Length: 328
Image 1: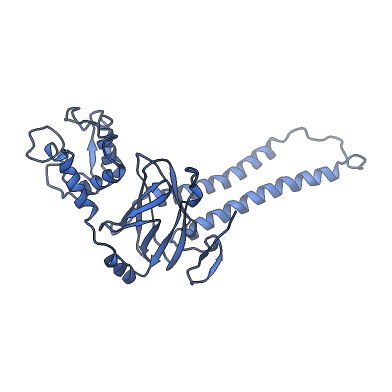
Image 2 (image 1 turned 120 degrees about the vertical axis):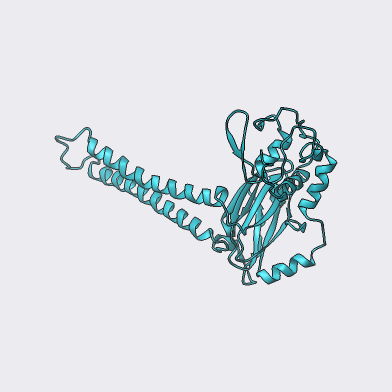
C-alpha cells in the first residue's frame, strides 16, 4: 500500500496532515467530541480492569484475605455503577446528536453558497450555481457557509474530507446534504469513504479553500456555461412539464411558482416541505405524495431522465418566483 503525502495549508508536505489540521468551523467541535468519548471509554475500562486486578491479587489462591461473610449481591453498587455510566454516555449521545443535526439537517444561514456534488464510479463531479463544473476538485471561498447537495449516478459513495471532519453518503436516486464553513486557506484531500467498486481507492480529489477575492477571480476564469437553473428551464419544456405546471394550463396540476421551501398539503392528510428531496421524488415517484385536491395523473420519469438532469430541474423549480395564490 502506498501512502501519499498531501500538501499542507502552509505549502509544505506531511504524512496525513488531515489528522491534525482543522480547516472548518465544525472540526474543533468534532475533535472535542472524539476526545471526550475516548477519555470516557478509557476511564470506564480502567475502572473495570483496576477492580479486576485488585480482586485477582487480593483473593488469589493461597492468600490470607478474609473470605467470611462475603456479600453475594449489592443492589446499591449495581444501580450506582449503571446510573453513573449511563448519565455520562447519554451526555455523549446528545452531544453527538446535536453535532449531527447541525451538519446534516440543520438550517444553514440564508446567504449559504449551494454547490452540487455527484458521485460516479470513480470520480466526484461538482457544479456551482453559475454553471462552473469541476471533476475531482471543489473550490470554495474561505469564511463562507457552504451547503453541499449530494447524490450519486450509480452506487453509494461517501464524500469524506478529513481536514473538515466531514463525511456524508451520496445515494443514487436521493439527495443528502451537509453544510460547513471552511476557515483555513489551502488544499485538502477528498476521499470516497464507501467501498464502491474495484477502483474505489482511486476515487479521490482535493478541496481548495481560497480567499474570497481569489475565489471570485477563479469563478470568472472558468469556462463560461449556462447556469443550472437555465438548463433546467430548457429541460422543463423538453420533457413537457410546462404543459401541465403553468398557470394557464388546462390540466389540473399544481403550479410550481414559489413552491420550494413551502409546506405542501397531501391527500393523506400529512404535510411535507417542498425541499430538493421532495421535488426529486415528485418527478420520479409521482404517486408517492399526491398533493391534496389534484388527481393522480402525473407519469413517472424514472429511467427516462438522468440524475444530472434531475438536478437541473430541481434548480429551475427552486428559482421560480413566488406568486400569491399559486402554491398548492
